[in-house]
Amino acid sequence: MSANEFVTTEYLVILEKSSVGALFNFIKSGNDLNQLIQNESSLIIQSNKLHSGNLKLDYKIRCGSVSGKAQRYFYISVKGKNNELLQYTKSLRELKKALGEQNFIIETLQDDVSFYYSRKAYSIIHEIENLMRKFITFFMIAKVGKDWVSDNLPSQVKSALKKTKPRKYSSELQKLDFKDLGFILFDTYQLADNTSLYNKIKSYKSSDEILLSDLKNFIPRSNWDHFFSEQVEIEGPTLKSKWERLYELRNSVAHTSYLSSDKYEEIRDLVSELKPTLERAFERLGKLQLDTSERLAISDRVATTLDARVGAYFSDINYLEKEIRALLPNAHEMPLAELIDELVRKGEIENYTGEKIRKLIHLRGSVSFNSITSKENINELASQLHDVQSQIQKSWSKEVYFALKALGGRSQLDKIYTQVEKQTNRRLFGSWRTSVRRAIYFHSSDVELFNGKYDIYKQISKGVWMIRKSIDPTMLREFLGGEDAKN
Image: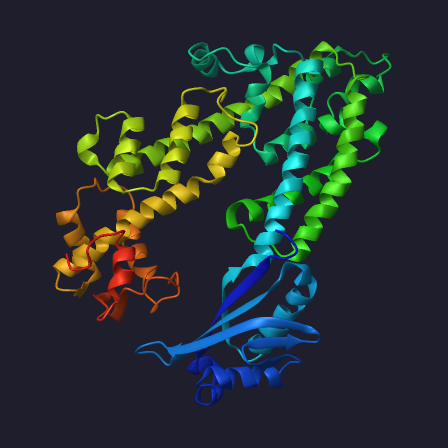
């Protein structure tokens, strides 16, 4: 984003009579709300401009009423330049404070500022993740040994590996997600098990002198504390807490694409602390020597983690395949890759979603995940599974609409379920009724789950719904994915 680019923030402000009291009768237009904002803040609104000190921002407002409800809504759009970001953000805070203090409900529809920080954060998180992966790969292969995979993986995983193409030793580490990378370094374990401890104690005679060094291996310690903390001068628990916090913030970036400036600064601070620490530890690796017991203990811990990750991966993919196959039940014998092509051709799923699924199909054939590129590994693909689920959920929207239309445009929820069962071509399994309800709730301004785009359904009473009258034909065609609205 260059200095000349613009950022836009959009809010949907809702006034509910039961919450705002007498204000509901006074705030009836955009001008009324503008006047309240100016009374409650230092902001000035004139001629579609919002003035905050010397800053002048583009400002739009429009309002409307929620049919059948004692509710009024206001759409507010604020637009500014990227090089005014700090003052722009300050103005937005003042605007939200003025509205929030009146008990108005504020929903954020678009937040370019958060998206800007999210993109910046992703690049530095990606850098520290690559550094950690490089560090652990070198540690496992150069110090534990290149045969740690074949020596320590469970037998069922070894069998699967034999069926795959030759792979790099490091590929086994690629399935570890961000959090599990920290697990290898920071999780505590004993280098020797309790049985060895009991045997050691039993071997001592009353006259023997117990060596402290013999007992230290029975104290649970992390790989970091055992091999690096003395040279790098930071304790494992401290480093672990920083890594786990960075993992939480990383999830905010990966799953929402929105990030506040405060959280971005926290990410930047954490990375600035972690990066030099890992770089110093990496320099220490060349001097590190492990004995046989240490190598075996470390490789066993990592193999256990890998096995758990493989199980979780296949579980997610298997459930996803069921949902995909349910879209075309008559093609149950069709190879999944061909089925995806057919679903894309029929418009049941979008092409970009099909591409994501194809990559997952390819990855499923190899436990070692050799097909992972440096920019898109298995964990990033897994984090995007919710996008695929959302696309499948979208396919329900059209189906539920035509079910309700077949019932005369108005019906009880139970009858809608029955109609869907009668007319659907997909195989129904699991919580399909939840998908039906979501298809209604997401497209009705009468409920909190409304996504704000297609207001298709009206709630008559509890459990009773109807298709709204006078829906804009263009919007309806878009909602139905190109279907003729008259059909």
